[in-house]
Image (cartoon, rainbow, N blue to C red; front, side):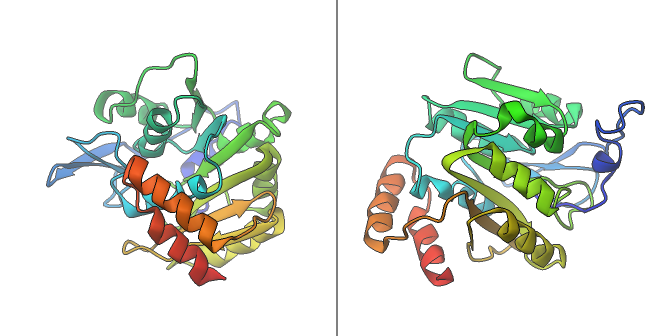
Length: 260
């Protein structure tokens, strides 16, 4: 859910293939029917309501799907940073026509998502790649391939995204198909926020930040091409999303309107 710039994961990534990556321990907690993922600290890296395993429990995770206001039937979706598999599961269940790819460097996270967070087995339209997100977005084979990227890259210290350079965000833009959108989880109360926002604005045609949620998360919508923000059309689309999914899409529209 939240992370730091110079993480162990980044320092020991696949760009140093001669050394085995080191990771913080993957730990769990449960409270009031919700299971939480941690990396050995009190910081929450993801959550699942045990009786509703496919529901995005945390408000920021719900906001990460605000791209649905603009893209109704995505063909390919990529999740950078698996976390508790919240967004990966939601996309896999909600969009049966879409191919969903999750990218996660830590094999222990992948394993615990299968055993404790109801991550479905891989099939013809779902796969999990154990690799560095930077390597993934820099791979020319992925350029222009995805309608949606969802980026939630944090480590144990939970201060700011692990990958936050203009070059990284430019590579993410390269992976988007025409009209594609990337959503990014930021931490509004940390200096990394302004650094990431500046880098995203360098890389994308338009960036819109939704209002900060109670845990300090700020979700940014990054558009490959600036959209036409038609208030009436967005309201209609939000009502459709609420009816189909119960996600709070009307609040997303209010957040977009407030940012204008």
